[in-house]
Structures are given as structure tokens and as C-alpha cells.
Image 1 (tube, rainbow, N blue to C red):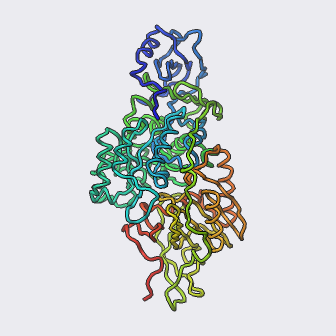
Image 2 (image 1 turned 90 degrees about the vertical axis):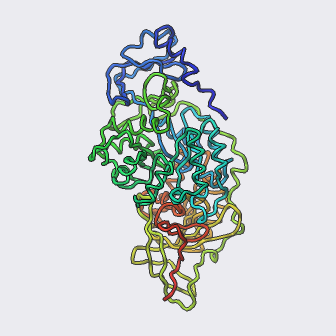
Image 3 (image 1 turned 30 degrees about the vertical axis):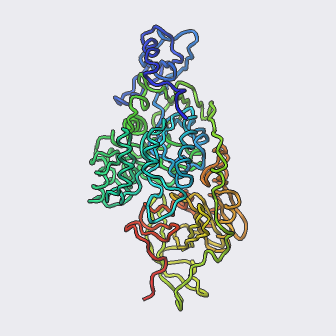
Length: 604
């Protein structure tokens, strides 16, 4: 799959020159708008944009001299003309959508460039899954660039994935037309300790002249951080406070700061710009993870830019953080990220730079959305059967699969418990005193809040394995369970519940439908989101998936959960590279030390 249908700047330089010189007419002219120049941070009134073959030929006060009888004229009517928005770090799979349907959902919000890391599907289908995502991305009418996943598994020795990504895979992918770099290097202990495999992946990327994505999820900014930076990652999106952003920028990294469906990290870090006065060109906005409901109801990168402005950022600086800063970081400043000659003609018309209503979107010189509605097709791949049959449990599960046996003779135990943190990816390492009935440890109300059971069900190799532990913070009540085959990053199946029978019902239901998310209460299914592609995505329209996801959220609330976007919290409970506690198919992982710890503390 190639992107040859869209010409490069050198391919059409003569045509651009002839239009700019007035010797040939433009294909399209956008007339009389306010030109938002992100190179100089200026707004220039009464400017025109002339477009030829999908690229910008001229920007200036009067393009009438290159407007012919067949030139399409778009009247800006004094509105702001801003570059199409770029998402610097994101996972399409988190939207529960294929690349085509994700594009369809975000184009009306003004996103015209995405830098995607398909490491979710890499964990399930390996290099072939990455290829499928890459190929469908190149079919779209906007720019979807792919970063080759770096870490499957994300923490070797602490989890088992469906497939492993190798250094050879990375080297091969660097030659694919849509690959712009290496996806987030989550194995930060591996880099800090000069692991040969991790360094081989980084070297293959650097030798190809492409960008190495970072992911340093530790609060320790000492020697391990210094060693990680020395290893080559060029950016990081795991910061949660001002000091994190400052440390990264001082070390020559770009601070990628995210506002996803459940990650609210902009407000705490943007003060490095708004209060400390650091150079904003090294500060980049992204989403990381947005589910379909957020995309349909709240927006995408337009939402992030608005939020940054609401946090005190100058609107022009916020726009730089979502356009030219991103393009520069990936070495694409001469291709995207600004409204200047030679660049792809990705332009938004908006009447307000603060509220940022997206009134018209042009991508590659074509009107792709107007007044919130998409106006183009987003082509689909024909996804093979091998991508649709990925849930292999080995046997039908029963309540006994979810039992946690107590030490002999114990009436109560001390358990290590995963503690949820609302609107953040990290968890807390908690302890809870739990009762024992008939030799089994029971979830109950604990001093730190309610304690539910959590299980990770192996679904790649049909081993029949179930790992059980405890989690606190969801607020669930009654007899219920929620199961999901979206379980970052190894993507087995996560089941959280207050009742073992409901947990078995939920897990078996997902095996029946080929993957997704479901919630049961008292033996009745309250909501179901089918995700048949790799157990991660649907190829249905975002509006349909969002409607089902909304019912899921309502069902979670009906079961007592009031956390913001709690589904996203649920899906990250197996992410064994973000502190403090996580669950994997191998057991309970203390991510502070990268060691397995017991669910039940030994009796003393």
C-alpha cells in the first residue's frame, strides 16, 4: 500500500510556481480570511489562499490574478483560516473504531493529521495487524501517519502477548510508506538498562532518519530518567505535573501533553508555558486515548486546543502546539502544520479562535467537512477472518475460575489492591483487610473504599488461564460484573465484578460475540459493545459505537460507578508499564519495582 495518489511538493513544484506567478489558474481559492500564521504567530486580515493539486501555491492579500473561470472559490467571509489540527500521539483502537471510521469521526472536528501508534493490535495480531492498520490509514482523505509499535510485550517477563514485536519487525516497517517513526518506547527500564533489543529498535529508527516516541511513566527524574533520555526517545506524553514537562523540555525532548477521554494532564503542565515562560515550541498537544463517545459528543483535537486556552494559554500558542510544533517534531514541517506554500492544503475556517467552532474543513485541497458534517468517503479495507476471530478462552468459564483461596485456617487476610485514580493513568498500591468465607477471600467494603474482584482471562492462546486479584475505586454495588477484551497493552480480557457468577457470564458473553465490552447485573446483560476486529475495534460508524458506549456508561453508573470515563480506567488495569499496581496473565505486578507481588500477604 502506498500514498502515491497524493503528489509530493517536488512532484508538482512547476504547477505551484505557475499558479503563484499568475501563469496558471488555481484549482481552489479561499478568499478574504484572517490568515493565522503559526510560523510567526500573527493574524493577518484580508488574505487569500490559492491551492493547486492539493497543495498551497500562494498565500497573500489578493489571489484574483490566479483565479480562473473553473477555479473553485470558497468565501472565508472574514473568518480565521487556521492549519488543520494534528494529533501528535494517539491510538486509533482506543476509539473502538477502525482507521476509516476514526477518520470519519474526527474530520468534522478539524483533525487533518494523526500520528498513530497501533500497538494495541500489534499485541493481538503482530506485524500483520500493524500492516492492516497502516494500509487502511493510507486510504483516508486526511493524513494518518503510523508509528511502528516498539513494545509487544511492553514489559517482557511480566506479561504474555498474542504476538511479539521484534527488532527485525521494526527495521522492516521503517521502509513502509506511511511509517514516520517508532511508537512509544514503554519499556523504559529496558532502555535505562541498555537492553539490546530495545536499543536495536531505536537504532533502526534513528538510522532511517525517523522519530523515536517516548513513554517514561515513572515519577523519578533521577538517573533512570537521564539514562532513558540518553537512549534516544525524543518525546514523552506520560507527564502529569509541571516539573515533568520542564524536565523533558530541558533535556531536549518534546513534552507531549494529553487530554484524552480520561487523561487530564494539560492543566497541570501548561503552567510551564503560561507561568514559567518556557519556549512553547517544545510543547505539543495530543489525545493519546479517546473513545467514540468523546469523539462524537465532545470533539477531538479541537477539544484539546479549547481546553489549553481555557487553562490560560494564548490561543495562537495553543494552535502552534497542535499544528507546527507537531509537524516539526516529526520532520514534516515542510509538508504539514502551516498555511504556507508547498504544504498540503489542510485548512480550517473558524469564526472564533477561543471557542474554535469548526465551520469548514479542507484537507489536501478538498472540502472534507462543513458545519459539523463530513462530505467525503473514508474507504475501508476488507479485514480478513484472521483479524475477526481472536477470542480463545480454552473452555467455558464458571464461578470457580474466579475464586481466590485463602491460606489454610485464615479468617481474614491482608490483600494488595489496585487503587483507581480518577482522570489519570497511574493507580495506587493499596492494602485492604478482607474476610474469608468457606476458605475463599471475599471482596467487601474496605477502609480505602469498596473492593471488587478483578480477573485477567488469557484469550490469545486458549490456555484457560485466569489471574485473580482485587481492585478498589469503581464504587460498584450489588451483584454485577464488567468484562472487556480491550485490556492495554497485552489485550487479554479484564473482568471486574462483585460476584463470581456474573464475572463468568460476562467473560463467556465476550467469547460468544468475538470481543468487546459487556456489563451484567443479576444475570442480565445491561450493555454490550461488540468489537469484532481483534477484540478491539468495530467497523461500524462512530455514532453507532458511541451510542452503545453511552449505554455502557449508563450501565456502569447504574451499578454504582460515578468515575469520569471509568471504562478507560478499566481498560488500563493490565498496563504493566504505568505505576503503581497492575494485573497481568502472570500475576499482580508492582510497577514501581517491576516485580511480581502476591495478591494475599503471607500470614505472620
